[in-house]
Image 1 (cartoon, rainbow over the protein chains, first blue to last red):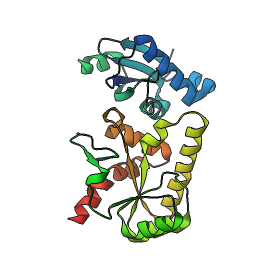
Image 2: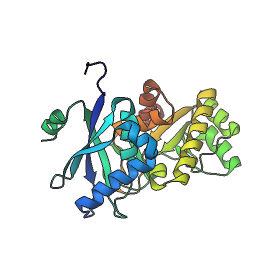
Image 3: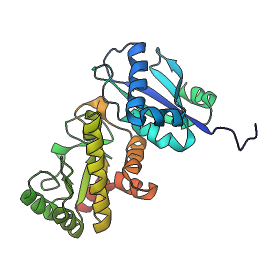
Length: 107
Length: 148
């Protein structure tokens, strides 16, 4: 595949903030439900959304999104105000073109 | 600098209660809004109703209209969609009259505080370009400097 034909993607690093204890499945469900609610089924498929990495111990995760829809994804994640009804939210930390660089900077 | 509804200990935030008198005003009454748009530096309309009267008065007096991220985050589904739509219409009117805009968190709790990047992207999502969005984030500092 030519480089110009390749699907352009960005990765967004987010973390869970708040004192409430939330389980891994609750966080994963929250991310999926909010992205689906914000983009809709069609938008979510166009955005090529995927939760590519999640570390419960660090309360952080990385999502993949199409480059053109990066800003919308940041808005979507930052508008999460509670996780499973508990006082916690998702904060977007940074975005990058590779997962490796996000993991390196998150250390 | 961000603006919060409650007294949260955060270095980059200001509590609404600590602002000088006649600096911040919040109302939904059209008459009160007109008066506040002439007197105050920041005007918060919780319903985000776009009315030419107070928007033009705010433009003449240099008052900035507040857009809160927490108001949107608290809602979901159709209610959130309607609120964002109202915000976009109000922002369009602000652009038409040249009224200043200030995008902030207006958080009740510490975890609700949004970082500057999130506020910048939210401002762009509402319909501002990057330059306008950056200007809108620094509006509180600008107004406070102007007071001194």
